[in-house]
Length: 288
Image (cartoon, rainbow, N blue to C red; front, side, top):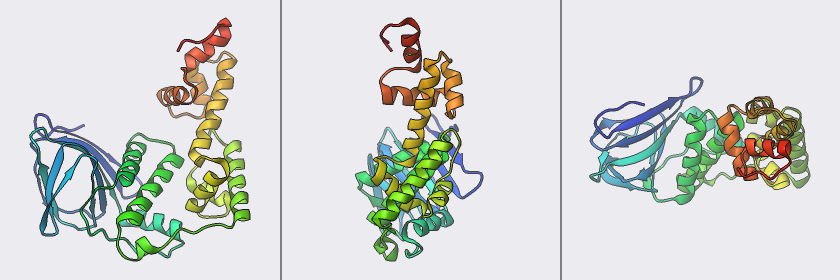
């Protein structure tokens, strides 16, 4: 975390391997000098309001709104309210956007342009709020890629102009869809404790990453990353029932850390891993 003035803070993350960056910040006094980025920049305002100038006009982004800047769009920025504003912003390089769109459309979509620097779009805002923590929190590769694709697709489909918005996703025939989903499921079951990438799953399924995602959801009712997590949770439950410590169960089942394991165990089963383990050991109901 870095601090500029009293009440101002910022946390920054950068992918070491590709042009993908993210910041979570709260600014009260900080004023951005006019600048631009060599990437697409998408931001969601969480609280307060920010005002800025872009493309010769003034704009304000209040809580729940999304800001969209094309590469090389000059803009400034400052708080529009006394208590400042909090926002999450992601800078996504054109090459990353291009790769996502090629996967979704089979190379039929032009690079997007966004003619509205501020949009009031709850669906897009939710997609960006889901992407940001997946990037900065070191989520599994499947989670990061699924959420990156969902955010870019939502941004382009709902707010871009030109060919990028018009090109539809590639669809698999029904039979091929079921077969692709089954192949990916087989790989997930064989290597659920490994950090599989979306591309590895797509290669096993014989289709694009996006086509596989849609096929898998249609066949099994959840995203590949959710299925992978479920397999890990089931393995951890078996280990806990055998008396293994929660930390050992988390590591052996493939979770990145015990906190992540604990959070998802409670979300899916309603009790803590420790309560589940103690219930069997003592032969009595768990209390959490």
